[in-house]
Image 1 (spheres, helix red, strand yellow):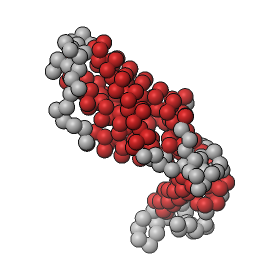
Image 2 (cartoon, rainbow, N blue to C red):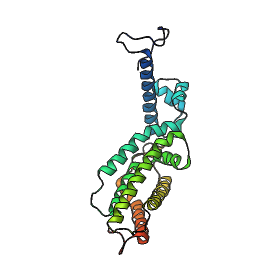
Image 3 (cartoon, one colour):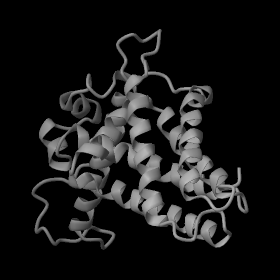
Image 4 (cartoon, rainbow, N blue to C red):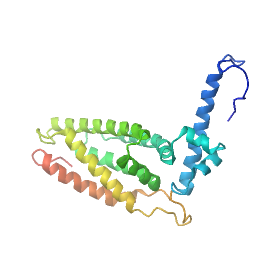
Length: 243
């Protein structure tokens, strides 16, 4: 990371390559912010969220504590920034692999499974983030809320298509059904992550813990199948939704 020298003239002065010093400052701010995020992500993964301090993040990033607070309000806002790109990529992967032409139940189970898989990659950090998503109105979470709103819109579209195919009743409300699915997903995720023992045996003090295998999802997926069966018993067409 380079440092802009102090006392180099007017704030609007140009460098030898013709760019303004303001551009240099913006670049430095971005580099500093990136360094803080990288340090925080590393410490959250190795030490766990609760054990990581702002002072430790600052030390690892090579900046002062005040600089960390200049860019981020607190650890929670840092956690959001660290994980949001992972969540966005998980959503992209989920939708790109959606089985085209499959019955609505199979499509929804695919999306639910992929969403659960996203939590398994770093379960303890996911638990903290999910709790923030559900209980907090922090402005840092607006981007996550936008992602959720987009997923809700797309699921509603899938349900509308299923209605046209006769898989769900003609008087069923796709938007309301989407809310029911999201409510189940958030509740089951919180209960599941809250009950996990995620500390690795070789690192007894580490909250980050190891990633979980896909097999750990099976009890949760059984619940999802039961929920969708119950849901489609209520809104399914004649004979219910296809499996």
